[in-house]
Length: 348
Image (cartoon, rainbow, N blue to C red; front, side, top):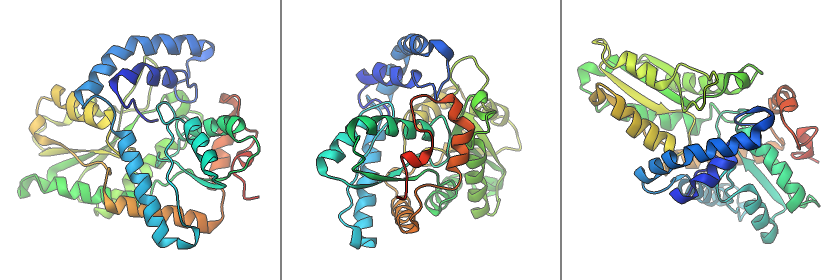
């Protein structure tokens, strides 16, 4: 999704976000309602960005990770070097069209779209995919760039192993006699139930990530998958992170809570403000609540991302076996895009 690099860019970011019916379906008045909701929310969201340093760090971390992945690829795939890093966000700069213009200028002919949503959703991963298709028609109508897509990686080693390590690091901060009674809460961005009910892959893939990490930890602690960042009055996927924290934090049998941002690849407002500030301010027993690290500059994570790209390129597959079913189940809710994913990602 990206995030405003400066708090003053918040309104532009929210306008794009609430205008995207793939993400938040608002019906036939999407454009008008999106602008109204963005305007109403801008001031409060601006204040939150100011509280975490004046803007979102997601661009910094995304560009850092992408550059480091390309350097690693030069080492492990020297026959395809040099690898060039490009970052594109759906609602903030650099936008998809900025990336495409730069790639065109640089003479790129082969590109891998690597989704930084580890778990697929028609509201997020697919929204970025459709935007890539729309903007390519404008910036590369001749189709000079051949694309393929790493569209999901919910059980990748570079996700499972670092998260297990981050959780172990936090467990060590509790007294030894209490560690077995610390509850691990995996918190993911929630999703409107109308999207879930279409057969969206996201809830199952987030759950797969959680289970793989707990397997790595040998299920040594009780755990739950919870959901954060609900927007608006419509039903969203629950239980909400805040309500579960409220239920558990004063229980005598619960000696601690570790929050794990399971669907994010770096820190941004959902971790730095929603979990670290808002949740902690509302908590009645904040001293027992800790948050596991985000990936940010973690070298194991970055090295593993490069391995995923290498594996993808060597497979020759344009996208995963799941993508066409995802498209089939969600295409009636999407406008101005392809008739089939092969129009954008093709091995031919």
